[in-house]
Image (cartoon, rainbow, N blue to C red; front, side, top):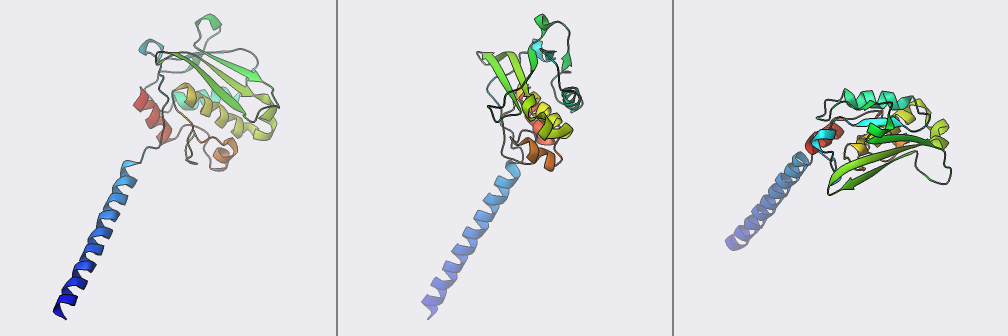
Length: 187
């Protein structure tokens, strides 16, 4: 009887120790995985950390609001501002109208050897009426996030989540702490 009791107690202790170990690992993973941002391999060089952009054609007024959101976010990137001469701009912002695609905005990054040479941000006017002001603002801020080396995320509480209407529903119109941390990690 005593041998059975010792074996049973030993089994219970092993199970308790295993559960304690798994709980500790789960807590560690939860704490370590605070930042969910994902970065592209390309970066702006130090002489281009104040990205200049140029409007190729008429603009969404929400782009200026999104730009200000990023400028006031506390990132290591300098101010993102507009210039009148496209020859000196590293970023072009173009309004397109294309019903044949499913995106309201996209960011095309041209890079060489890991360094960003230029960026084209396209804002699809076909979706502007369904998005509303907040939707257009979050699309612009999201595309600027790509310009700053951030990838899309699955986290609904981040600006880099792919769904513009999901971001609006959650009140995510500009950069969040995770997005800012990602940019500061890159630069």
